Amino acid sequence: MFDPLWKLAVGLLTGIVFGVLLQKGRVAKFRVIVSQFLLTDWTVVKIMGTAVVVGAIGIYALLPEGLVSLHLKPLVWFGIIVGGICFGVGMALFGYCPGTSVAATGEGRRDAMVGVLGMLGGAATYVLLYPGLSGLLKMWGDAGKVTLPQWTDTSPWIWIGGLAAALLIWAGILYSTSGSRRQHPSEGGFHKPTAA
Amino acid sequence: MNNPLVHKSWSPWIVGIGIGVLSWFAFWSANHPLGITTAFEHTAALIIQGISPEFADSNSYYQEESPKIGWEWMLVLGVFIGSLISSITSGDRERITVPPMWARRFGSSAALRLTVAFFAGALMMFGARLASGCTSGHGISGNLQLAASSWLFSIIFFAVAILTAFLVYGRKEGDHV
Image 1: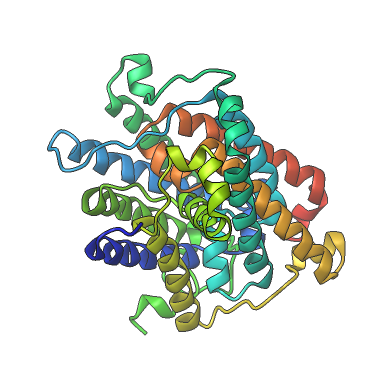
Image 2: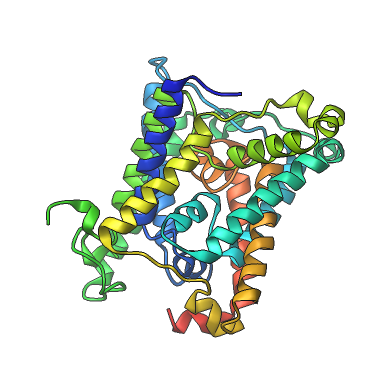
């Protein structure tokens, strides 16, 4: 029922850092999330894209050293497709994702607090319906726990290199074209305004 | 003023690098990817078990899963505390019920906003559990492992969210942002 104490402490520490990063990244804000889906504010993609590229470099570098292991989610077709549709509709209407809604609660947002209760309700619904759902989930089959490099029989570094190049080119274009345009004049100075 | 916590925001690139490095730490220290929604599922399962142990005995969920208060539960608690610290040190508290962008489209009714927030949060979590992951578990942790399931999930949820946002808030909202 409980993890060992050291693991709980490490989880809490990791979470606090994650919470600070989400709040400073402004993704605990309704307008930032919804504006991403209206394609007028690209903060969410910038953060996720950078996290994925930096994360991938570290994990695939540490993997051969035996310091980390992969934890892949299986490609259950029904779960991923129907789950993705429910998730997309829900997130656009709620204006927060699961992690950022918890961060938004920390920021004082009342609608996020109610939404977090709703999330608990959604999780309870899943548990209550599980006996029926587990059959539905198997309906369209399962491609297993597979990575894109395994699927295509290529090196992961080709994928990581491609993602990193795409991110750097995009950042370069933003940096060189945004010039004097500042999207968030109220912000502090801990970042280059031109890259906003 | 050298304390970065007093700033209301950091560059999204810095935040992204921070989350990427934090992922290394999570994989290395706890052998665990960053993820949020399993903790919600386990909490809900434990509450249900507490209310009706007989129901739990008859539900196959409890044969296949062993819900617990673990690393991920503490991670969620930590996200709350971290955001609380960050918003207090920078004065970026937003004690709002109806976001202004929502109010421009649907009016300032708190009841409407909270009802939609509750059910949209529930739908989002239900979807996340069907897919075994969310924006963190699939969107960041799964994608950085180059998992096929996570890339497919991310593409689908992003496309559906864009479609929903345009249908619900309309293209015009873009002018206000």
